[in-house]
Length: 325
Image (cartoon, rainbow, N blue to C red; front, side, top):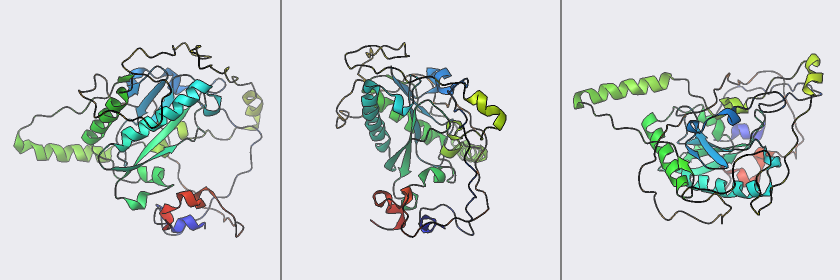
């Protein structure tokens, strides 16, 4: 077994076996949003997000999970990472820094992991995962696995965190759509019973974690009869957008912000002048996608590797989880 199975951050123990690799397929199946497959992100309304701007939107999962915060940054235009024109590519860097800072400002958050996979959906989406402060066992590459293992945080804390992040982003423009939880005025004698019932209901709910999200579940390999159909062609990448304000290719959204702020590229070192005042306006944070199925590890075969082989998990820049600093 690889060395990372002995790291303190590895979520599993006991007898483990590596699955046997399947033979490669001649043609990969289309992702959501490719070919004739419908794009869920393009069809999602703004009220399914916690914050929206003219070219970017931020959404959450449909209910709390094990980490303090899990958010997804999406482009409005149907583009993948490598298709971004210069303007959106520059803004992606600015939005990544802003959202990371907003999440890291929450109480109890030590680090924010930024991930992009994209095997399930062709619409650009970047994952932001908050690692709880002091939980050293959750450091490193396996944080997305721990998200589905840890008990979910309370819904009240989750909604408050969403509202704080949305308000933080709105300081630079766009619209915050997440609201903090409402105060439930109850008689003192009923508070404990109601809290216990709410916690029990939350524990029974099947929370959808990062690795179970619909946009990250790859489609099964195509049958031989489907290969020709899959070769029907895909949309070509749009022309590059110049920085002089020309409209984006394939998008009817204007390039100028009309809200109190700007989504234009800015210095990555800029920070908000302080905590945003007021309460975010309307809407609730919900997810526009429903997950189906949960990938589970298989048991079969063994794998060997050369002595000097290296992998992403053995990268010295990300090896805090194996005890080396």
